[in-house]
Image (tube, rainbow, N blue to C red; front, side, top):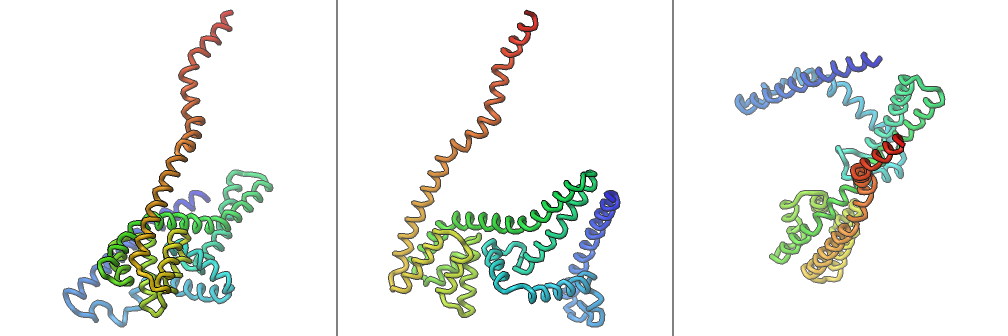
Length: 307
């Protein structure tokens, strides 16, 4: 069974590599036909348009799309909204939606217990151990997708917090130069990259689609769980409501953010000796003891043997 699985994996992998190369060659040839010959009909013949597509696009993809639609209809709205919020906070990895996440979770709950069952069967373990493996596989399949989203959210929030002071400085300078708030955000988004810049870009797109500035900025607070960014957005909305100058508000916030970053750096520096204590005790000190006390211990043992 193991050799058969290995053979199928290698065969399908080689087939996929050659198929990918052929698709790239066909794509390049189509572009050459379009730009050199300047003939749209020669690029994609109307008669062979459907047969030109791969088996995956003609058969598997439509079935998968229909299955996703039917699955989404059966999915409760509250559950979908809750999962969608977690996915957006994680930055929608791989373009994932709430339905995709739920499908991945269900596939994991089904596939992982089978894998653990096969592993237990290969080890020739008892029935009790195999049942424990299956239960462990179900738990892993259920919790690992949530853990993945949680870790992605944590990393994304950390990256947004790191780039926040620089974006805030650029935004302040742009406003001081005479730009409006939306134009200043556009300049900042063009200069910076990262989760916060992406959220600001999404904020601009939502404003262009008809949302108010308050609604678009409030959406950032829901997708980024960072206290400093939430305080910044709250201050901007309050200043806009009361008619206070935005430059003065941003300058004060920038000073506070710089001070907070300095305090976080000092806090991490204070934690460093405590974090270094555990590797010293577990790995370095035993090696030193072996090097320093090893010869003395050997001599004591030989003395007792001779005596």
